[in-house]
Image 1 (tube, rainbow, N blue to C red):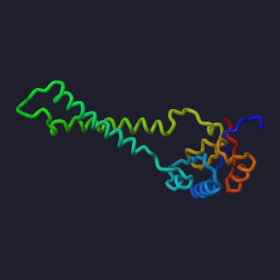
Image 2: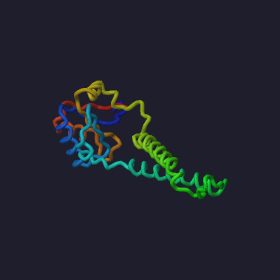
Image 3: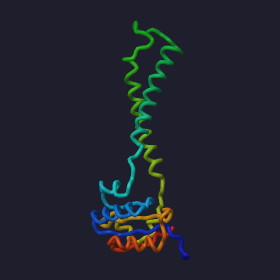
Image 4: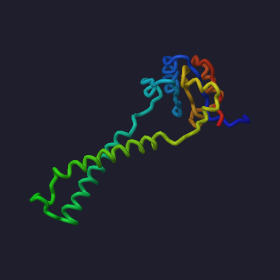
Length: 177
């Protein structure tokens, strides 16, 4: 082949067809797959074998880091570095530490959520090879697409193309890089 193939893209008319095809692709042993639709389809993650994200744990870690930073900073400043008794309160006054520790918890957790999401989604990615397929523009309006990448260990161009055509796809496209 003269052209460099990124993968094969199958077009479907309904979300049910897409989910059924994704189940068959996963059962056939393909791992490097992706699905595109104009709205979220909750069954597609399980159909493609996508595991749960570690993002909640990253957010929890960011929140804990923020809490410890907030309390640690205040303990250092008020107890160790510059201890001054104000209004008869002790140096370590936990109730007065709560507001700023809470704010740092929220700040660090939100940073972990935003940057974790960007990292896990592989962003920024302003270009993807599926944009080379003219009919892919319909993925935002009415059509459903299923992609098998060439990087998949089971990918063989002819076998994979025949397999995708057997899934009752409306059409199967070559996705060029």
